[in-house]
Length: 126
Image 1 (cartoon, helix red, strand yellow):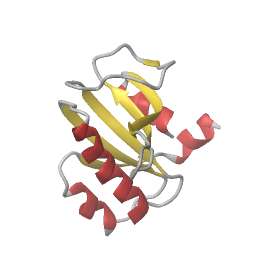
Image 2 (spheres, one colour):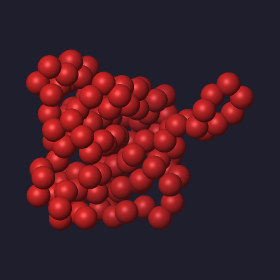
Image 3 (cartoon, rainbow, N blue to C red):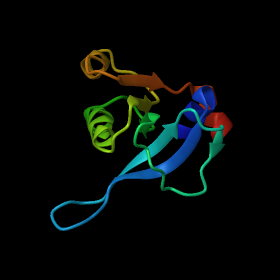
């Protein structure tokens, strides 16, 4: 799902990008994907990248209807990336079905969006 979305927007795709490292008092946090805009369209070999000052899209994905866990990931991933010094961020919740009650609640937050992945895209990826 994340690769399908990345193919729509281009840039450098970093899968399982770490936004918080593990240490005493905090757990390691990964996002499903980070897209760094302004870079050639390719999949990164390394999962490390200095995002300070960069324009990025953070992607969280669930192969089901939009729900509150995915919404939380979308919202808090955005905030964790602000802490890393990005200049511009778009936070995308990828799902296979929309929810007309929950979508407006998420999209009222700055830079948070829902993208429903078409069924045909799921079969193309498999």
